[in-house]
Length: 201
Image (cartoon, rainbow, N blue to C red; front, side, top):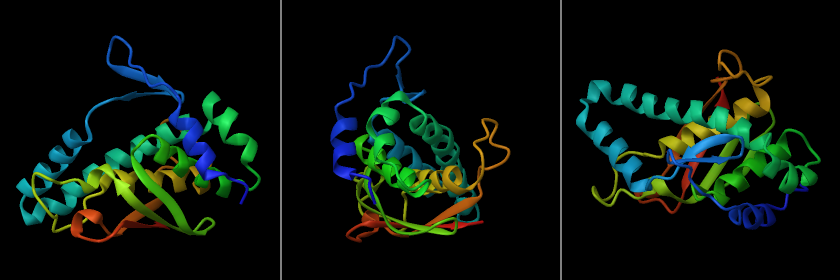
């Protein structure tokens, strides 16, 4: 593999993140917001703890789906950005596998999760391991009884959509949701790391 993960993380971490007058950060061909991870964690935990057992699966699907759609469009913005072309693109030899490895290096550089691919069967399956991620911090509630890394689940599936789901569709009608992700381990549950298994739908 030609991807130098550490160099990508170092170079992408140096990019200045400055918000505009609307509180949005224009970067990587998309607009992102700078809000504390605790805000999202508290929202997700409150939502999933307040719904009854009959609605938990639906509530979790909504959280994962929001991340899936965001990851699909933001991921495309990342891999077509000038920053990507300058830092990652020169390292790419195997498409789309190197793009996936590069995307998770950017994911790490942005502080979402120290995540990397530990297994990849092109077009079929990917296993991602995260050793640190903002969703693992459920301090208000203590240890979680359920895996709660909805963002990593959605984004990981979206990255596989971008790699193997066909041409990017800005409307998300084709190519999106061709993969799904199941979280099998979680730091929030007492495991040493989070593990995510992404497979074709």
